[in-house]
Amino acid sequence: MKLAFPRLLGTATLLACAPSRQGVPSPAPEPHPRPVQSVIPAPASVQFGGHEAFVLSDSTAVVYTASATDDVARVADYLAGMLAPTVLRTTRPLATSDPTPRGAVRLAIDAQATSFGDEGYALTVTRDSVVLTAREPAGLFHGVQTIRQLLPVSVEHPAAMQRRLSLPSIRIVDTPRFAWRGAMLDVSRHFLDVDDVKRFIDGMALYKFNRLHLHLSDDQGWRLEIKSWPALAALGGRSEVGGGVGGSYTQAQYSDLVAYARDRYITVVPEIEMPGHSNAALSAIPALNCDGIATAPYTGTNVGFSTLCASSDTVFSILNDIIREVAAITPGEFIHIGGDEVEKLGHAQFLRFVERAEKIVRANGKRMIGWGEIAPATLDASSVVQHWRYSEGKSADSSFLHAARGGMIIASPGARTYLDMKYDSTTVLGLRWAGLIGIRDAYEWEPSTLLTGVSERSLFGVEAPLWSETLEKRGDFEFMAYPRLLAIAEIGWTPRVQRRWDDFRMRLAEHGPRLQALGVNFYRAPEVPWRR
Image (cartoon, rainbow, N blue to C red; front, top):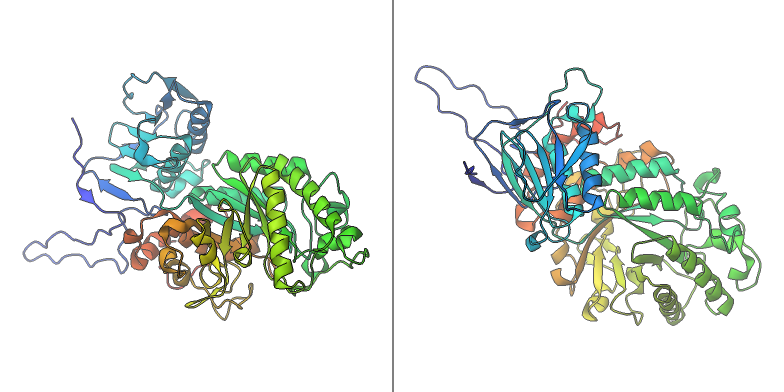
């Protein structure tokens, strides 16, 4: 029998109570009614069934369409591993024509489901089965994250005794609003080891991000091995803010991170900062300086004082070596060249530098991204500008120029998305030059109306940068990222008409126990009625 799901848009909260019987008072409502579902980011369409839940047990099988790709089998194994030991750990294929077995969770690819795009999915849960369908494996993976969030928080405790997992009867059809949903980690000012970055990637995957922007070089440290110029990591990687020991990734470690992210449908975007924010490189390779003399390592936090020698062909030859090696170990199509806060070059000289850098990136088979200052250069429309210079109501870059030439813009307004800003005046970590950013500030803004001359069709998406001047260890990074990262996730994924602060904060409250179960050091924003 076909289930009839009543239409219930997105993230509406169930407020209605049963009518009171005569002479019997109705129970007092909860001070903060729990949302019907607490998925973040909110799905595009949700319909609830009036039927019993689907209960997982040791007889539940995870199956997938036999003709699907190896990627589908991997997503099925990922799901089974998440649900184990409550369900059978082993997965098995089915023929496309086979019916879904009673009591099974099925993953299927439907190449004709063009409305899903590359990352959308449909999830149908009844008492008898769970069916997750997508056009591409990425959509299945995102759908698995929705399943995870619909399950009790005990799914995060596989060793719990008598763990009972069930899913509500529900129908979700979901696809992201923006193609680019990113977070940036600054590992240059303070270094994070591979395992800490992987933990950050896991958190991004749970909330359906798909780009990890790694800021790999700055004044304070160079973090990636370059085999043709080993001094960059050997010498430039030894410092960080405050004089710590620094560190760097070998190319093998970087490739491991890239593969780990790719398995979670996240693309790593490396940033090699130029021509400014370059003192670590200048201290490692004298030829990058116009006078041929290496600078001293820098462990402070000032900006704007450094620049590569823009008039030297040798510098561009070295940059080509660097970009060639980075491109060779980066499967994704983008390389970020920075380009912000350059105070030691004239404007015309800076623009010529950016144009030469773009040619190098394109010659090595990649598309260039740069911060908003690069927009006035004569750029190819395939390059991308990342807007950041924004204070309340004011933009201080020329992103609109790139939009006018048909280029795409990533929105990272400092006053809304910079996760290193303090939450309030009492926050110990973080800076405040872009303002204090509470969770509501991070949530209540609209990318399509942010910048004059940059309409929805010119928006690639959104990204939340996490700079690390004041962040030394993993717990520091997590505290500043969570829960604001979840707000940015919803802005990037959920349709504009379905985003409402009061609804979001109630769903966010339900994620406190999940984040706690995952060991995430998050900020308990006072405006959110956190569940314990």
